[in-house]
Every structure is written in C-alpha cells, then in structure tokens.
Length: 315
Image (tube, rainbow, N blue to C red; front, side, top):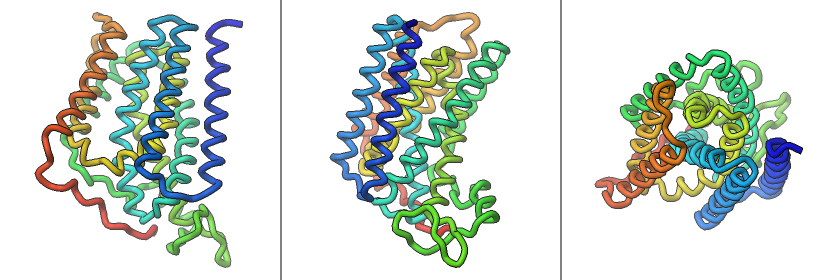
C-alpha cells in the first residue's frame, strides 16, 4: 500500500472518530465551556495535529511535513480572526453559552464538507490553469488590505441574505428553546439556534474563500491542503471559547493576520520566479503571529474592548 494511501486512511479514521466523539459529547449535555476546559481542548487538538504532522513527515518526507505545519498555522491563525465574528453572531442572536458548543460542532461539520469541495476544485483549477495562482495572490493581497482597514463591528448578522431566504421558507421562532434547531407550534418553526447556525455556516464559506487560497500558496497537494484545513477547523469550537474569555489579549492579532495574508499573496505572485523554501515560510508565519500576540500583551489597551452588539431576537 502506497504511503499516501496509508496517510489518507489514517486521516479519515482519525477525523471520523474525533468528529463522532465530539458530536456525541455536544449532543449529550448542554453546558458552558469554561476557560480551563477550552485551554485543555485547544491543547488536545494542537497535539493531535502535531502528531499527524510528524507522521506525515515520517511517511511522505520532511518537506511535506513543513508544508503541513505551515498550512496548518496559517489556517489556524486565520480562524482566530473568524472566531471574533462568531462572538458577534452569538451575541446578536442572544444564544446562551450552554447551547453554543452544539451550534459550533454542527457548523464545523458543515465547514469540513464545504472545504472539501472548494479545496479539490481549487487544486484542480490551479493545475489546469496555472495563471490562476496570480489571481489568488491578488485576492489575498486585497483581503489583507481590507482586513487592515476594516473596523470592528462592521458585520450585521441580521443582514445575511441566506438568513433572509430561510425566513421566507420557514418561520423563525423568536421564543427561547431547549437547544432544538426546530420546534412545532401548529406548524414547524426554525429556532434562533438554527438561524445562528445558518449565519455561522455562510460566514465560514466566506472565510474559506480567503483562507483556502492562502493555503494553496503553500502547497497544491490535495492531501496537505485538506488535512491541514480540517485539523485547523476541528479545533475551532474550543478556540472560540478560549478567545471569548481572553479576547482583550489579542488587540494586534488582526494586524498580524493581515500581514500574514499579504506575505502569502506576495509569495503566490512571485512563485513563478522565486521559490520561497517551506521552512522559511513557516518561520515567517510563526514569527508574525508570535509578534502580534506579544505586542498585544505588552502594549495595554487604554480602554476595555469594544462592546459586542446588543442581543437581538431572530427576525
């Protein structure tokens, strides 16, 4: 059996087992995830990803391992910024913390399938039309600039077009529920939990349009791109609750992430002329991420973080 086929088997078995366990735990009991639990879960997912990365190096070679870790770090760092958007979404729909893990678990499962389609399509397009790598590079640079100048709180979850379409198909109930996505009151209604899930899923689709080209700049190997994405995405639930509890410590994270996107965009644009070693890219990404977090800790914010949007009822 070829090493790549062995690695695909290991990945599928590992990811499926962890997903089923996560869904069972999430559906089994609604509870608020504490900072300590979130830290332990984050550490667990990072360790699992690291073990898989080292196994990739052993089976497929040192360079593939570097590509995996670089892609994983980029995707995970981009996910940090996305989590702040999810914090706004949950605040907007006034979702109790004990029900948020359930929404995030199903949201992550949907994200995995969406990214499967986007990644395999993107890799095929780049292999077929090599000039597309320059288009993706330009998209990343534009995204980096937009991220740098965008103000916090610009997003309005209630303006989501998919949510508006859902409201035309099925009524959205405004009353609090016991953690169900649908409830029957004469006719079936979607609950605020399901409305939130819809907004989370569509938001992740938008995030993927930015993050997947960034990973494709590191590798066009479908195995590397997809596995690094999945291992980054599966840890988002615990990452969300960790960041929600210490969000003041990440004042300069958005700036750091935008610089990473800008660097990756430039890497794509010059890829036809200059090949940047995977080890150098990993060092640059880790260095920028570490510096942005360090500056956030050293330079104290003169004011408390901006207030989250006032909770709304689903409309």
